[in-house]
Length: 190
Image (cartoon, rainbow, N blue to C red):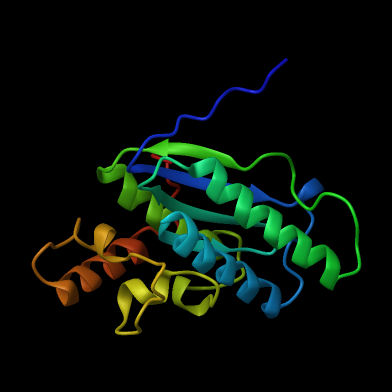
C-alpha cells in the first residue's frame, strides 16, 4: 500500500515532528544539537525554508516550518538525511536514525498557530526537564521574549505580530505571559 501524498503548496505552514527510531535519542551531545541547527540554516539558504519555532528534545524535535516554494519534502529530506549521516558517522553507528517519515501537520495561520508555538516551547516543562521554558537552551523561546537576536533562518516576527503588530517589545511581553499561562494546562487545541 502506497503511503499518502503530502499536501504541499507555496506559503504553507507545517508542524513537523521527527522522532528517533524506537524513541531512541537522536541527540547525544550539545554538538549534535548545534549540528541540526546548522542544517536548519543550510535548508533556509538552499530551499528558502522559514523556521518559526523549534525545540530539540533528546529523542525528537518539533518545528513550525513555512515553505514559500512548496518544497516541504525536499527541505525535510535534506535536513534529515544530512543530520542522520553526520550522527551515524560521529557516533560510529549504522542503520536508520528516525522512526519512519517525519510527521507534518498542515497548520492554518490563525489562533491555532500561536497555541502550537506555546505547545512546542512548553515541551521541556511538560516532561519535567525544566521548570520554565527559558531554562531550556535548545528552543527558540528565548528569542521570542528577550533582546537576543535570532539566527537569520528563524522568523519570530510572524508569530509575535499575532500578539501586537505595532510594538515588538509589547508583543514579546504578551507572548511571554501567554506561554507562562500555559504551564500546567493541557493543550486541548493541539
